[in-house]
Image (cartoon, rainbow, N blue to C red; front, side, top):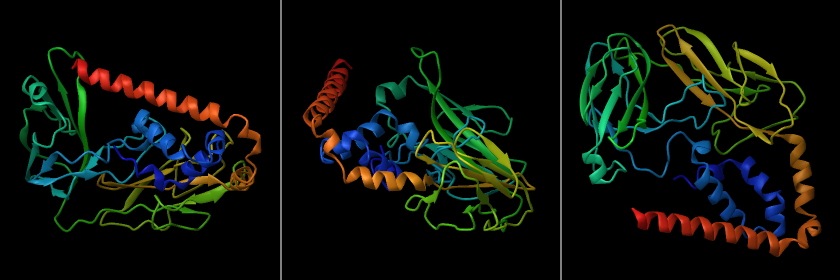
Length: 311
């Protein structure tokens, strides 16, 4: 599990620091709160746990985590992993689940069956190792599910984005987002500040073109809404402190690239700074809040320990 990933999202950390929980305890439980949040809601951080070692190989090379951590609506599909290379149409590709790295007990693995969906409409496969040939260029979502006779619903264990290119020298587009004409080289460490409730501009003019012509620009605006176009104007409501818009650019051969950024409310930063320097409102409830948090953590820990003993 990735306990460092969300620490890089300064907006979330600021939200924790400005909350009554932090103020009530002089920040002593802030780190514990972040950890608990990630423990209970890991899928909010990423589609795949970053603390988990890779277990899926393509042509003998392990896959890696996908670069974009989250989307805000179901139709904007994201994978857990990305393939370690580009693959050419009509060339056979080898795939393998490394059972030594797979986070599955041996006794469960022995009674599990696996279903491989290649994402191209061809027949599914099974087992731990397979080979497949893609006959059309494009970006494909491949998925593997596992089930046992005791579990009726198959469980997703791997989803991976595979790029199948027309030629070996083909170059994918590289999506990049500008906010009011300004970009970033590290979306994890840098956030953009805009005034929520006021129009601002998102544009893709810094996107690097690849071999194929870009034919579609899709924006997941981070609040469950989407738009298309090379640039869009938008304004956020005040319902949350931060949003994470995603841009997907797709070329004429169906190959795409994603990029994301984090946008925080510029007005909230001033209020947070004032709140951090005025903690007296919460002093009366300091020990009650800290005690409650510790109690909840102890209960969760007991449930986890006794649950493992039963198995």
